[in-house]
Image 1 (cartoon, rainbow, N blue to C red):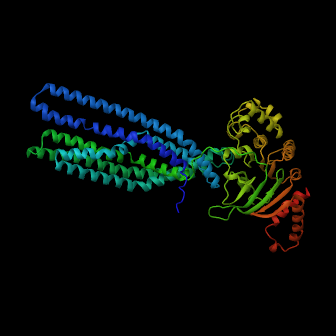
Image 2: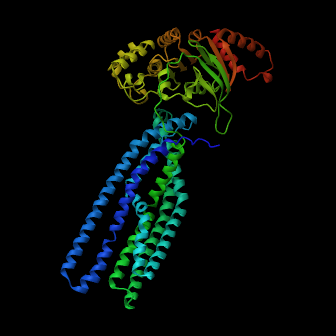
Image 3: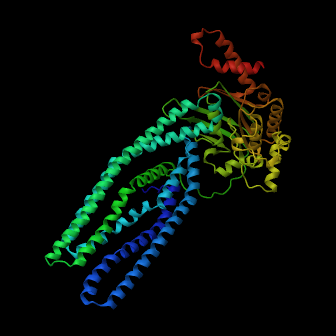
Amino acid sequence: MKTANPQPSALQVAIKEAKRAVRPLIWFSGGINVLMLTGALYMLQVYHRVLGSHSLETLVMLSLMAAGALATMAGLEVVRGRLLAKVGSWMNARLAPVLLTASVEYAASAPGQVNARPLRDLDQVRNFFTSPSIFPILDAPWAPIFFAAIFLMHPWLGWLALCGGIVLFALALLNEYITRKPLTEATSAQSRAYTQAEAAIRNAEVVQAMGMLKPLLEGWKAHQDEANKGQVLAANRGGVIAAIARCHRLALQMAILGLGAYLVLQNEASPGIMIAASILMGRALAPVEQAIATWKATVGARAAYKRLTAVAGQYPEVKPVLPLPRPKGKFEAENITLGRQGGEPILKGISFQLSPGETMALIGPSGAGKTSLARVLAGAWRPSGGRALLDGMSVAEWAAEDRGRYVGYLPQDIELFAGTVSDNIARFATLNPTVFKHVVRAAQLAGVHELIKGLPKAYATEIGEAGAILSGGQRQRIGLARALYGDPALLILDEPNSNLDKEGEDALVAAIGIAKATKTTIILIAHRPNIMAKVDKILVLNRGQQVLFGPRDYVFNELANRARKVTQMPMAAQPPTLEVVKEVKEVKEA
């Protein structure tokens, strides 16, 4: 029985498309290399025909033909260079969206593995394609033409050139072997240095306020020193090999001239053959020598491509899908688990059901897994096992555009973006009168409309990177408006009142009430009593496990009973759920 072929990844599809552009490059390189024979052939004809016949007309015609061949070769090189630039530009336009999508998907499927390096790797691969470093790869397949031409002139010359080429190729392999490890280690250390520097810049306020710059600088310098050490070691080793290769090529050039002179003295070759063989051998060995000189760039591009394959090679090509109808809001969690590398799972078997319009609160102590569960339920993270179903369909499997229309999510870290207030609330949809109408409606539902009108340019106010010009409470209220945009069927709010004052909390409670009235299913993480009064059900988590789930009053009464029993037990026998009991007891008493 034959199995169906797996769907190709987005990167594989793009590389397959790129091959169609690479084929003309190969043929252009073939034409250029064939025309490289012009100098040697011109030399042969001058020695054999012009000097022997003393014919000026022959010299003129040969010179004109050689000039035409060289002009054609120059034209082909210009076209090849422009085609390479075009391929590089196409690669960036075609692969950058694929890699950004794959990076987001990778971060969603591997919590904590956030990595934007693929875009830098794409730049490195593109720059390699548009630099002279690619020429040895394009020219090397045509080297046998030159060796064959030398063999036709005389077998001894051919064998000398071929043996010398094998030695030079062995030096290239040796160069790769002795520089691979230090270059790999240097690249890894440089990556760690970049990551640490970006983290320091991103958290500049904390770094400056708490005097953390010096120790961070020392750690960054250690990574930089390690990278420099590897690069210097690789450069030293590569320099030695390059020097040996250069000396070997010059010695080989002299050897073929000497052998050619010997054959001339033995009347087995002409002076023209001696000179032409030297020219042809230099051209045949040029790609290998150039490859040694540009080996660092080649290795870097190859490593970058491998990293691109690791990130983007596992995600299928995104294809247009038909939009699904608006869900009614029935939500189910089926035995959701979330793994963690090298440790206990973050979530272990979470299951519950919510009807359209119901509101559920997630409660539990710090580290219980509430935020992780919220991310899984919103489709931001893919669970290791189980499913989160909205109207019977897995949230993680919905097309991102569909999920965005029907799911509103306010994360614990608000995560606004550089742009205007309208852009952020509209989730960066193209603004038009209809979209702006929905933006204003979402702001009014979130109770932030009047606040926005007080900003310098109202909805057109630029808020800066991560909403830098706004206070924490303002960012949270605009984030709530973004979550409410488009009247979602499912609304997930993670600590929505953590930065709010009394006015903001009142607006939040009112927004939750309006959303419940429109049959929006709501899941929120909160502990303050004015919000807890709005919930229908409560899910209690502790250490990634589901402790209790049910109607609000039932859960409160059950936890109160457990609290009384726990406080009567000896301290050593008290179960870990005491942390949850105490927290919920405080909420209930409030």
